[in-house]
Length: 198
Image (cartoon, rainbow, N blue to C red; front, side, top):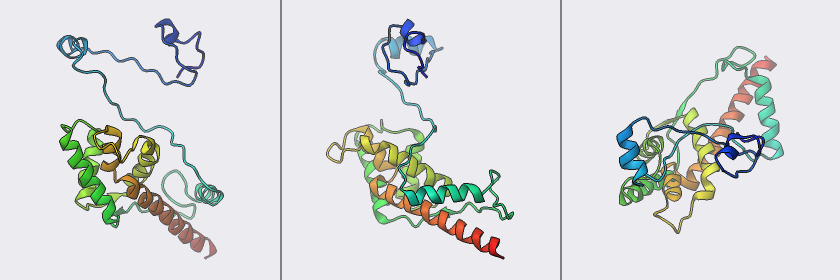
């Protein structure tokens, strides 16, 4: 991460980037790929996927619940009273989520299947077929869809940002995932408070 524009290595390479920019260097070890694909311009870039820090907009109630949850649930997935937090799977997402995933698959096929990571493509198949998804996947849906909303343009059906967003369930997927996470948190807190009262 660039912390000082003058002392950072990016400046050495003649790159004028703002403080806070994430920089990465990549070396292509395969000479044939370097010459035939990169140097010839057949490949203009590539996509990487990472799971870093998510910024979530929370109202006062959400913040209070998050703090309460932290106080109740220990890092090993057990509550302070020793109850194991069960990781369930869910397939009760609305038809709109399935339809968005199907639409994303169709649009991606029309565009040569060039959009999205393999994870996004697998996710779309799961959602389109109504398969159950884990709580961890629900979290990833909420995280990705909230971050990627700015790249979604319903009027530009050839844009990878739009296609990728649909593959993950689109706006309906975001609403469902956020609702499911709140529902699960309330249920866990209610159970834990009941145990503590006993």
